[in-house]
Length: 326
Ligand code: GYE
Image (cartoon, rainbow, N blue to C red):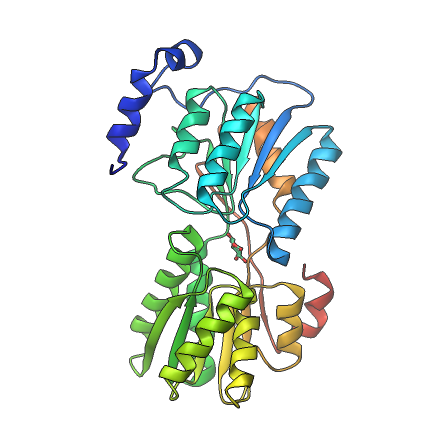
């Protein structure tokens, strides 16, 4: 069955139990003003430093605020993440922080929470805006501007190479908002700003180090003329370094590598000359996410999109900023 906005809404209306709890078509459910809350945090996976830093930030802030945190790890499965959210609903949490692994498969989780009268804040990744809306189906999205991250990396590349080079692109998880947007931001900026640059191939490495290494290895074999690798996150860039070296080439010399995130190993690779530049993507969501929840309970109007500022690393600042990387 194709899930569209209409089927979801019809599904909501059809349930009498849901009507008793929270009226269909209503706006985001309200949150009672309390000192502390029982909150859910539905994490997507825990296979890299970015995720671990994000989880730690949420746990620290929950502790600071005296909130009980129901934490789940979807272990890279969108289906498990939907089940995780349903279990939080069953446990009667007051509020849900959701990091949706993919844009479409997590729509039923957003709608189920709304139906149960539990407000949801999307953190770090978003859902398909044609299927669920901020300020209506969920409270808001807080995270980075992924399009801009891709653009900033492209602009650095164009400046550094004089607008020349043959690019291999390692995409993030298929259907994840940062993968979609980092591709769009980068590809459009290259097209518009560098007629002599070409993207030879673009393939998903699932935001994971070893998958990134494998995909980079295959792409390097198929395109021995490549001079640049753009990875949608540092983990895949670190995998790509291994692939470049395995192909008998020198990262930073034969192949210029650029990426996004700013984890410690990534910033260290800039210091070591193996990665050219990284646009940061902050994983420190805790303070802001909880502040938004309390502010919503206090009756403040919450903007639909709240953007985290990101820094930018290259050889000019990597050494001095290394200590502050996650
Ligand atoms: O870049 C990546 C992580 O959703 C913004 O997901 C996040 C991305 C981040 O696994 O490393």
